Image (tube, rainbow, N blue to C red):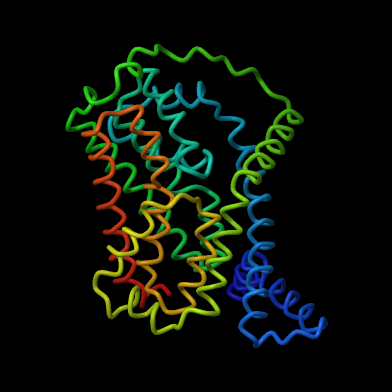
Length: 335
C-alpha cells in the first residue's frame, strides 16, 4: 500500500503523468496524430512547460517563504556561531534555501565575505546554493525517483563542505580582491515580518524568479523535445552511454559554459535519460550547468583573484566528475 501511494505521488503528483495524457488527448481531439514526430515534440513541449511552471511556482513560493526567515544578516549571525567543519556544514545547508542560480548567490557570498566570515565557510555556501536546493530535490524526485534525488543532494552537500574546507586549509584569503575585505561588516537589521508580509515577499520572489527563468525553461524544454523525438537513441548511447567511459567528463565539459538553473536543465535531463544516457553523465551535466556557468564565473572573478577562482573551478569540476562516475557505478542498484 505504501509503495502504491508513493508511486502515485511520484508519477501523478510530481511527475504529472496525468497532464501528459491530458495534453495527448487534447492534441488527438484536434485531429493530430501523436505518433508523428512533430506532434510528439509539441506534446512533450506543452506538457513539460506546464509541469515545470507549476512545480516552479509552488516550490519558489514555499522556499521564498522559508527564506524570509533567513535574511543576509540573520544568516551571517547563524554562520558566525560555528567553527571548523560544523560551520562549513551549516553554510552548505543554508545554501539550500537560497535562490536557484549561481549568479544570484554570488552577491550573498560577497556580503558574507565582507562581513568577516571565514573564506571556506562562504565558499561552502557558494558551492551549495546553486548545486543543491530544495527545488532540485523535488524536481529530481519527479524524474528519477526519491533515492537518486536524495543521494544527489547529499553528494552535492559533501562537495560543498569538502570544497570549503580545502579552501580554508590552504589559506586563500590573500586571493580575495581587496575591496571585498575592506567593505566592512554588514549592519542591516531585518525587521520582524508579519505572516502577510512573508506571503507578499514569497509572491514577489515567485514572480521575479519566474520572469527571470522562463526563457531558460522554454529553451531547455525545446532542447529536450528535440532530443526526445528527433535524436536517435544510438547517438545518445554512444556519447553518454555505457560504451563511452569518458561520458561523464564530456557531459561536464559541455555543461560548464552554459548558463541555467535546475528548471532549465530538468527537461534536457529527462529526455537524455529516456534516450539511454547514463545517470551519472546526466547529473554531471546538470551540476556543471548550475555551478560552473560562464556568467557566474565572470561575476565571481570580480570578487576573487585568478588563483582562487581556479581552485574553485578545480574543486567543483573534480567533485562533479566523481559524483558522475559514482552514480554510473550504482545506477543498476538504484535506478
